[in-house]
Length: 214
Ligand SMILES: O=C(O)CCC(=O)C(=O)O
Ligand SMILES: [Fe+2]
Image 1 (tube, helix red, strand yellow):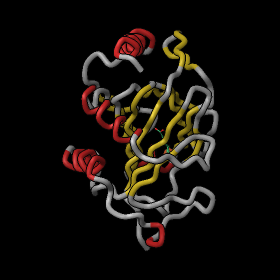
Image 2 (image 1 turned 135 degrees about the vertical axis):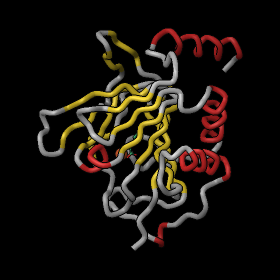
Image 3 (image 1 turned 180 degrees about the horizontal axis):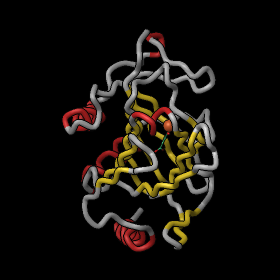
Image 4 (image 1 turned 90 degrees about the vertical axis):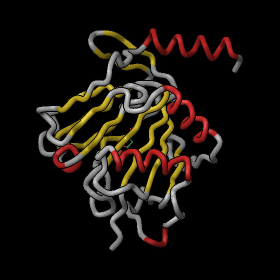
């Protein structure tokens, strides 16, 4: 991509999707334990992280591409154990793992990270992250495109709450948000937010977790 293209795509990003104006931390009355932090990382950190991710190999055994760090997660068996340990998180991820811990976003430092890539039209089915596999705090950092994540109440599926995830934002699931609500991203090419339609672009997310070793 040429410099001009890059500039244009950044400009495009600024004008076509809702952008964070100032640091905003949102708590949701309806979903206890859900926290949304805009501008969790700055643009330099965002680009640095994406750059590192794009230098690593991707797995494409799912509908979307993923990278697993620390431990491999078995989506079919919904399990993770010591046999699936890959090793320490790479240095470039440790920085953010440490930041999350120091900022108090995670009570224990993460030892597993999954990177998900979503091209326009791709999503992730509604789910609750494996409860016996991972501790009670799950954190997800968004890069690239914004998108809507839907939260659906586990015991009343008519309760569905959309949350806009802007690039560079952090979403933190604890308590009910972690255990009583499913989260998912619809597989579509655009999102409607505040009465406006936003075309999706490539989104990359990093989900930080602490594995429960039995
Ligand atoms: O893309 C995201 O922000 C969430 C990913 C997710 O829910 C997961 O990997 O379990
Ligand atoms: Fe999840």
